[in-house]
Amino acid sequence: MNSPPFVGQIFSSYSDALDQYYGYASKDGFSVRLGFTNYNTSKVDGKKLLVMRRLLCSKLGKVGLLHPIKLGKRRKNAVSRCGCCASIKIKREAMSEKWIVKNIILEHNHPLTTPSKVQFLPINRSISSTSILLFNSLSEVVNVPVSQQTAYFSSQVGEIEHMRCT
Ligand SMILES: [Zn+2]
Image (cartoon, protein in one colour):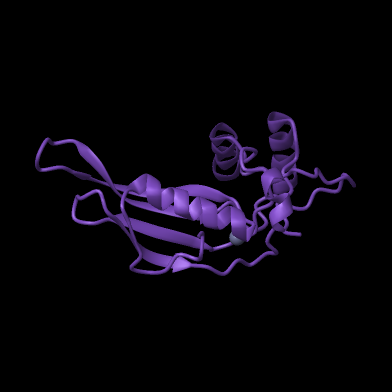
């Protein structure tokens, strides 16, 4: 049960594939973030059908997007991202219900949480998409120094997301 996935592994359904990977992730000690998707239009009924999904490690993210913040305390539950590339890509098999593992990166570039701590992983505490938009607009348009962006960003989010890996 919940052994590492492998390329060519077949799942009977999309939810089965997700269940298996989430199970493996929680056993291994990392949390999963939903990644990119691809859709195809069905020739039968014209509906868009999910045909590809990537599942990423929650620590995937830009390294050093936020500079280390000198406020002394580090929030225990802050999501730290360190550009971890661990991920899996699953594809629907020829518009059927079957899904196949196409690509896997199993290695993480950070320590994994011990199983006993898994339930406390901050899986629901990632930065909201609104905040990300806000942050991106600050970096791209306004060209404010990163330290000021960080301060502004933090005041918007109400907490500081520490971006360094432990
Ligand atoms: Zn990772």
